[in-house]
Image (tube, rainbow, N blue to C red; front, side, top):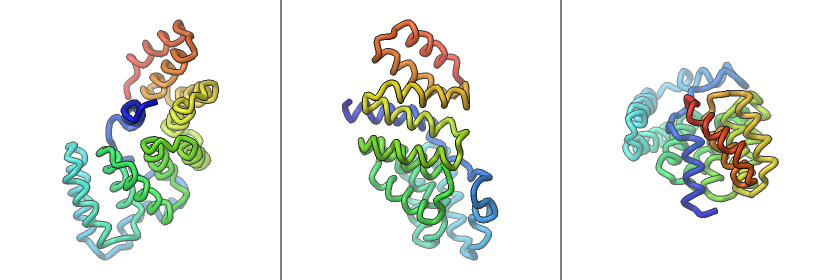
Length: 210
């Protein structure tokens, strides 16, 4: 699998380049108060500006805002998460990994942080470590369709097609509209030369909403 193909599959997983909202899981009281406990409103302002830029696909400019913000407030997992997702959008996998690891040092119970780490590891072609990260994401949020899809791509890129198929099926059961999972399932069947099932999965992918 070439570097170009690895990046393509990673893009499928996070194709909308969206930064997830903080979920109401794990340490809910802590995560909801990501900025309430900090008196530094400058960091919050930079974060808001960065999010606006990110939404408009101005990733390089967004990254500048997030980097300024983490210099001011180094103990906000939300800032490090935003920085990590922005690095992913720019295909900067090593700094993305470092950002997600920093976020995880602040809260290891958030599935979205483990997913981000897994995506960065896929980009770095560290597929076995990526699978482990997605497994951790699933532990903290078993219903996460995107985590199962990420795990599926890890196995797929290692040519572990049976394991990949199982993971993609789990992703689809959690979210029947998961486009990346349907594409992954189709790719697996294609590699297994089961062209009939591959065609069915590709057709499902065309109907998926995201």
